[in-house]
Image (tube, rainbow over all chains, first blue to last red; front, top):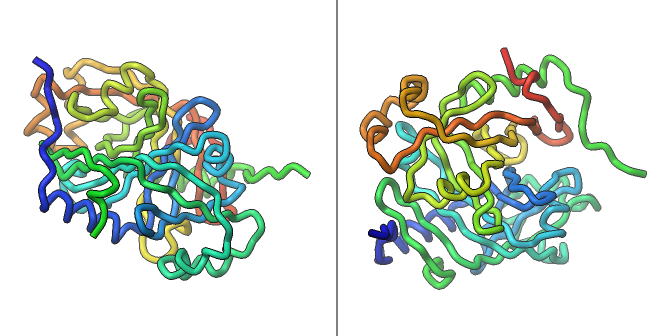
Length: 151
Length: 151
């Protein structure tokens, strides 16, 4: 028997996913680095159907995203007790390096980045959401489309 | 001019990395899933030169680790303010599915997992540390070996 671990999407699942997206200020990014997966932290600003992030040439993920723009981003912070009981969302994303004239939308969520956003080795990147996997806790997994992740 | 973003390792860096390892109870795992990077949360128990984790067949990372045991794990929680100012450690790991008779070492750190560790679709996995990248905050990056991550 093949198991289908995913539940049908309902309004509660959409609301939970949207809350995770809207409140995300950082996340764990998985990129392909010289053919292997690599995990790192990035700061985030939620945008329409995407996230904005600011990455440094000193971080391995930056060149990895240039070479292979498809990545995966996990958001949602665990609280006390079993870390797997807390909701998290993994979105698959397509990365695009964009002009820093769009920096205001990023700085609205990451005001401390004003200190370094102007440095030439920092780059603004849009991570457009391609699809999503919500894990709301044990037995509560949902596959979602970008349309499910809007208000 | 080629930039070397890494500092020489010192005792402060080793101590910080060791603290992150010792206190980690969960992390962000990056695996290779059908050729693409995939990020997800796993629960952790620190072990000697490795971490133990317990993974479910319902989670995409479990089969991904079977197909491609090389993965990347980020630990370290951000606090208030700029999320990039807080230390985190990315370790590259080799995953090995191990017998559940070693479960006691996991349950010592994850007591709530007693509720489900006996289920046949949960598997105990050892993630042996191959190398590490410590990011202690802006401009404080270090490459480390497994030997640097011991007490």
